[in-house]
Structures are given as C-alpha cells and as structure tokens.
Image 1: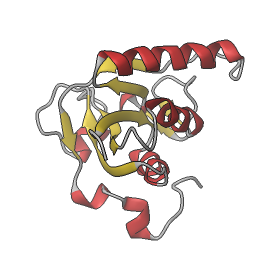
Image 2 (image 1 turned 120 degrees about the vertical axis):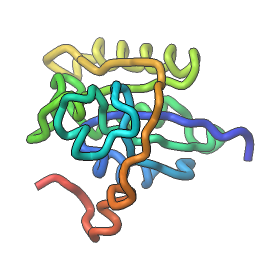
Image 3 (image 1 turned 180 degrees about the vertical axis):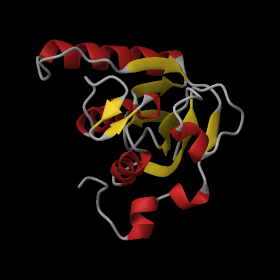
Image 4 (image 1 turned 180 degrees about the horizontal axis):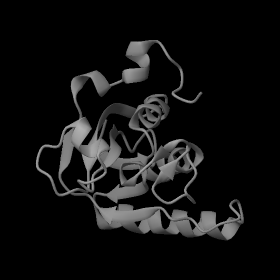
Length: 159
C-alpha cells in the first residue's frame, strides 16, 4: 500500500453520504463531521441552526492504488442532486449544501474538470451548483453520528 489520500464531500445529510462511501473498495475509513464554518468546535445542534456556516461532510481516507479520486467523484455525483442550492430532498439549509473540499491542487483540478464534464453531459436540466473549495478545519461529529446507519441497522436514510 502506497501513500493514503484524503477526500472530503458534502452532499446532504452525512449519514447516507458516509454509508455510500463505506461501500467503495479502496476506501479505508470514513468520518462524518462539519467543515467550512466559523464556529470553533461546533455541535450538531449548532450546525443544524444554520447559523455557523458549516456543512455536514464526510472525510474519506482512501488508497489511490485501489480507487481514484475520479471514481470517488463519480460516487459523489451519483448520490445526490448537485443542482439544488443548500438542499437535498427534505433537508434544507447551508449545512446540506453540495460541496467538494479539495486537499491539494490536483484534487481541485480533477473536481473542476469532473463538474464541467457532468454539466456539459446534459445529465441535469439545471446548472450544477456544487461548490469546490479548499479544505478547511474539519470538526469530527459526535460519536453517535459515526456510521449511524450501520449502528441503527438501516440501509438508507431516505423515506
């Protein structure tokens, strides 16, 4: 195994996003948390207030010899609607926005190219609003949120 890499994605409620990435071969670990906001060490309640600017995200540690960043992006695009601003299904607010937090210039370039290809493909009738931003301070969510769906014996958080 070579050098491990990190990727961070926000695509709505982090429970379902984490569950999707945990199924990907080459993903070694996932952690749900909060990123992109102003408040130090935010709680779930803080983030849910919509006033901190944080997004619910999943930090993915992966082996690039087994899964590429492009393949992770394919998963990201497939598990949510990247055309809805600050919303995924019934979840509304900045904490549920579609965002890719890149960890280096190469990830930024790959993410931008992936978004452009998807937009130009015509797969969506509306513009993709997914933000692509530099990774900032990641705050790990409370323990009960980690692998929540697995702990709860659920396959999905969709009703």
